[in-house]
Length: 356
Image 1: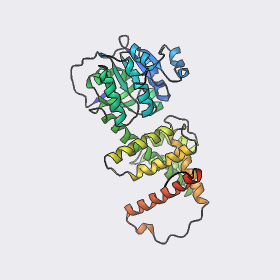
Image 2: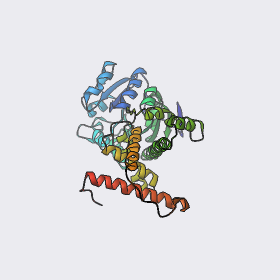
Image 3: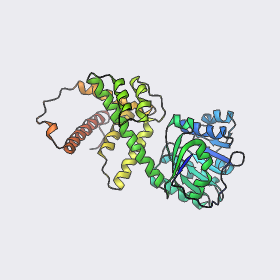
Image 4: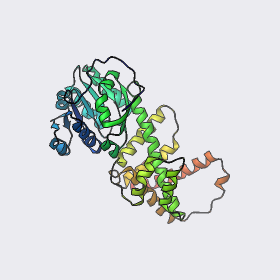
């Protein structure tokens, strides 16, 4: 496993090893199931907890031990991992009355691989460290297939001794781990990565739709992209299923929208305008309104196609000027303004109580 920007330093925590170190894992969803399964295959004793205990049943059948609460989970493990859906869930599971923090003590560690905002990660870190335990945030880059294959990328920050001690389980679940510094840096890196990914997916969907409406074969677009300078594994992997209208969830749309929301909040905090990400977020929000939250984030393709069909049915007055003669930045702003107005009108038609 590639370890990036790591520093050699004596650790107060024992390195995790199969047969010697008991691990805990909270959050047995699409990602948590695959990650925990890999830890079991590597020979670790793994304790598991999930709000819906039925989701842990397959892992228990494979040798995991079910815990009755997050507190019980952390008490039974030396190092506890968690993969939770959003900041609210991450904070509740960590700091609730029977949360993970209540089961921690000196000599233990908590590695939260959820995607949350910086403030949430910092609050959890403070609560964990108050028990004498160590804390690392390590959100992952990768979805269902990389999780199954043990090819995730961990974007870690926090207590370096825990990062070092957890290297073996991280290597079982992933292909690389980056140590990025103080708590919050991992969260920031993950939001940047997922902001780019979410924006790319919307542009990809719009490109496929534009190709189709222009008389081109969409599959040819996928092939051409794969051979050029902007070739991306995401396009090659998602393209065929998008063209088939199949959106089985590997990374749910609702989670992509959540990550864009958090990235936009980070942008506002540091005074970074992000009009492209904002437009992408609006498209995912439209998907949420259309009930697509639990589908794969590539289902944004259906949102784009629906908007194209709706647009074709609306007559447009002839433009009073040629936008090709306008400064590109101004043209982009005009396009984004029109998009937002159209989206706002659709939202108002659904809910007249929305304020301007």
